Length: 491
Image 1 (cartoon, rainbow, N blue to C red):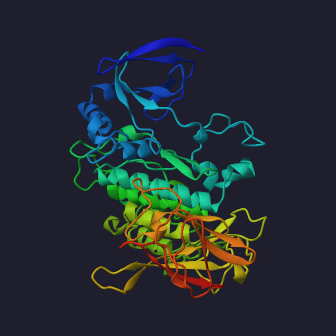
Image 2 (image 1 turned 180 degrees about the horizontal axis):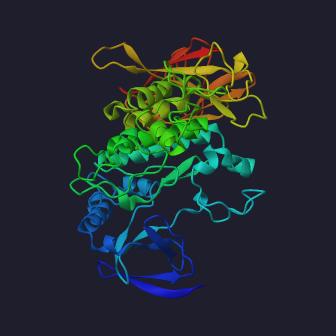
Image 3 (image 1 turned 45 degrees about the vertical axis):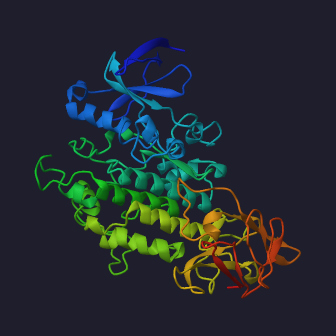
């Protein structure tokens, strides 16, 4: 262990850290760990940051009034309960304090262990202790990783939900990340989780935006197009919520399809690779799946946004066609969150044991084939619940509330049985029922629901099951919010 030093925080508290040779350095800070490695003490590389009042104001606001990892009662974000704060403390590495001496800096939680590679992650590279930046999993770097590190398609949908929810929470507070990218979101495909890092450069309302422009491939086209203008020029586009929404869409596209949405074969400036790159990501950016202009479409594009289901296909078209050069047309983070949750309910396990993806979106039951490996789905394994919510003031009338594809031992949660319930940070995550395939029959087993009925109208108490025959209709539970369920079998 290196030499123990002590830092003084702006509130007078002391914190120890370990001085080591060649500490990790980023673009703005260098890092030391506390002796127990639970936190990091980061000092800014440039003395000008210590003298910049905007930097200090930004950090004070981020650590205090805008902090989603602290409850409002503790001085954190408005409307934040203790449970919400605990939830988001696992989704961000949020700064906790400002260091006054020996240098200007911040204290942050250390990255959770599952976002660092362990020994054996690769047969060809020594990756132990390296951050799990998403480029390891979404680019050709995947070939260096052991198959067990890559997770599966379901995990990638789940971590996409996690990221959309985290960005939504920032935007609800009026914050923008300013450099959302593969470098500042760590992912763990084995658990379907992610954590947003480098929070100290957030765009805070009322404070001049940070100097961070972004990372190649994630910078919004309008920011890149005006990057040479002076920062205070009214024509200069600076990082904001809209630029985050471009980066968010890029990341989700990469997670689900393992490629970048703008990196295609089209050449814009044959005599200058630098100018070609600028045009391809800036003023002439073109979606590789643009439905009208195929000039940037790769020849080997097999799986497309259509294979992700209608909810995600619509959002990707809005993000990379309508909104690529018109920021106000981009889908909000909450829209991504909702569409991804719908998509999660449409996942079906691939029946080919060798399929690397293991799951796919079964949205077209007329063509039930895994788009990853081409493996078909047996019709007898297609069981869908069509959820319907009661219309207020219209007794006996129902509106569509979603579709769920079942698989053996699939758990159901409150949002599957109650109207106007969504699986966000405030949700009840206790299982209420589960589907199972037993002795050739599909059943929905009631775990804890009151008022669940069988298709014949009889009550199904907890511990008993309702048969899932084609065309069966029954109430998921009692009460005004209880959904009606209609079963379809075989597509």
